[in-house]
Amino acid sequence: MDLNQTFRSAYDALVSKPSSILPFYFMSVSVPAVARVAPILTGVFVYLALLRRGHIEEIQEVIDTIPFDEFQEEDPAAFEEVEGVETALRELSELIFVPEVIAVVVASVVVFALLLIVLNAAVSAGQINAIYSVLTDDMGADASEEADDSRFDDALTDGGESSVDHLGRGVEGVFEDTVTFALLRLLEVFLILAVTGALLLAGTVLLSGGGALAVAVGALLVLVWLLAVLIIHVFFIFAPQSVVIDENGVFGAIRGNLDFVSENAVEFIAYLIFVLAAVIALASVSGFFNVLGAPAATVLVTYLVFAPYIGAVKTDLYARHAGDEVDVPDASVDSGRVASAFRRGWDEMVAFTVSRFGLVVVSSVLFAVSAVAAWEVTQSAEVGFETSIADRLEQTALFGEFVNYTANNWSVAVAQSYAGFVFGVATVVSLVVNGALLGFLAATEQNLAELLAFVVPHGVIEIPALLISGALGLHLGLVAVGYVRGGVDTEGVTAEVREAYYVLVGLFVLFAVAGFVEAFISPYYYGPLLGI
Image (cartoon, rainbow, N blue to C red; front, side, top):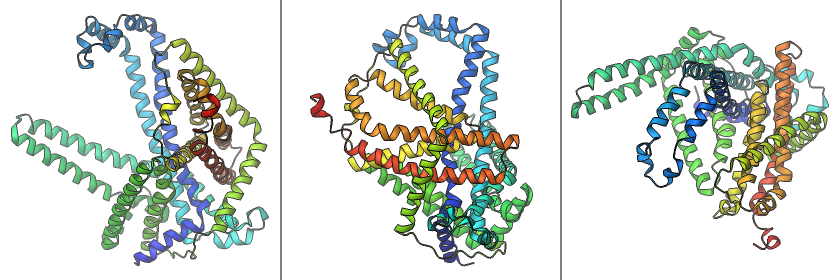
C-alpha cells in the first residue's frame, strides 16, 4: 500500500469535490448547537416540576433571607459561615432536590447523551459515505450521462451533476448507517465505562490504606486505564469504514477493523503517527490564531481542513485494503474555481432570501422579540453592573479581530443553519439566545449611544446575514418534518443539503465584509462625532 498515494488521493478528493464532502463537516459544527438546547430545556422542565409542587415562591422567600450584601465584605470561602446562610442553603436543597427534579435531570442527561451520540453517528455516516463515493467515483459514469442541467455546468460545482450524486450517496449513508454507527459508539463507551468502573472499584480497595504506596498504586491504575482505553479504541478505529465499505454490522465491522490492523500493521502505525502529527500541527495553528487574536478561526480550520483530510486518508486506507480501486483525478485549488464558488454562493444566498422571505421575517421576529424581552427583563431586574463597549475594544489587534469576527459569526451561522435538521428547535434557540444577548448588552451598556454607533455600521450587514442563516435553519427544520411525514424523499433532502451549503458560502462573503467593518471601521469612526 503506497501511503504517498493515499495522502495524494485524499487531497485530490477534497479539492475536486468539496461540495460533496464539506456539507457533512459543516453539520459537525451544528452538533454543539443542538447540545446547547439540553441545559435550556432541562431548566424549563425543572422549573415546571418545582412550579407544580408550589416551591417557586418558597425558594424566592428563602433567597430573600440570604444576606448577599455581606458577600462583598466577607471572604468568599467563608460565605457559608455568615449567619443564616447555612440554614438557607439547606432549605434550598430540600426545596429544589425533590424526586421530580432529580428524575427530570437524570432523564434529560440520558436523552441528550443519546441524542448527541446519534447526531455524531449520523454526521460521521454522511462524511464517510461521501468520501468513499468520491474516492471510488462509484457514481461518476451514470452521473455524467445525466449532467444536462445547465445550473450545474459551472466549473465550480465540482464537475457537474456527479457532485450532487456523491453528496446524495452521503445523504443515503446517513439513513442507512446511522444506527450501526451509533451502536458502535455506544459499545465503545460501554466498554470504557466498564473498565473505568472496575478500576475505580479496585482503586477504592487498594488505596484505602493511604501513604506513599497508595500514590504509586494510584499512578499505576491511571496508566492501566489509559492503556485499556487505547486498546478498546483500537478495536473500533476503522470500524466505521468497515460499515460503509464492507457493508458490515456492528460485530462484522469490529472484525473488519481487526483484519485491517493485523494485515496492515505498518500502515496502521503510520496512520497513528500521521494523526499525532496532525494534532500537533493543529495545536500549532491554534496557537498562531490565539497570538493573532483570532481563536475562533481554529474551529473553521479544524472542520474544513484537518478533520476532512484525516477522514479522507482513513477511508482511502481501508478502501485499498478492501480491494477497491481508488482513482481520483489530480486536482488543485485555483483562483478561478474559488471565485466561481463565491459567485454561486452569492447567487444561491440571494435566491434563497427572495424565495423564503417569509422565513426570514419569522427569523427576524424571533430575534427582535428576544432582544426586546431581554432588554425589559434586564432593566426591571436592576442587575447592578454595567458593560462598556469602549473597554471591550481596548488592546485589540485589527487583523486578528477581523479574522475572529468573521470566523465566529460564520460558525454561528453554519451551526444554527444545519442544526435546523433537528426539526428547527436548535435554530429557534440560537436566534433567541443571540437576540437576548444583544438586548442584555444594550440594557447594561453604560453609554448606549456609543454602543449603537459601534454596532450600526457592521450590524446592518451582520445581523441580516445571521437572520438569513436562521431562516435557512427553519427551512431545513421544515424539510426534516417533510421527510418524516413522507413529503420529501432522499433526493429532496440531498438538494436541500446542497443548497444550504452554497447559501452558507454566500453568507461567508457578508460576514467577511461585516468583520472587516467591525474590526477596521466601527471602533474608530464615531469618536469625533460623539466627542470621545
